[in-house]
Length: 79
Image 1 (cartoon, rainbow, N blue to C red):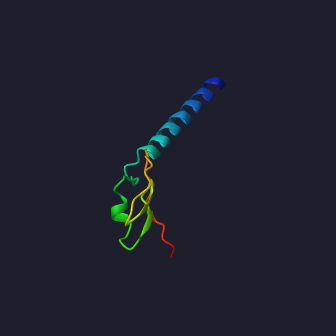
Image 2: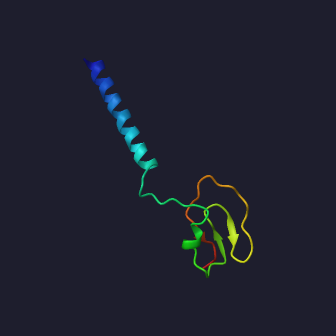
Image 3: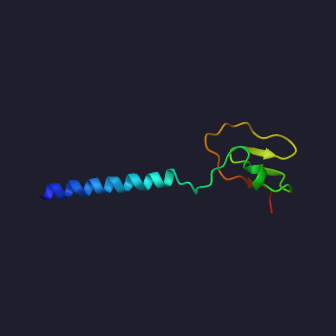
């Protein structure tokens, strides 16, 4: 009887962890960024910024690094 309870407990834990990891990975409310996200996030006044993958200068060019997943873009100008 004790082995059966342990096995049931283990199965429940595995199922709960599997469901929880699915919710984190496939969260429909999670913000997803792409190569063009910076255009709506970075203000025109920002001269140097991180586009989610590369470091960019508004008047020049960005580094050319390929990214599978983009992060949140942000301005790099000093305040």
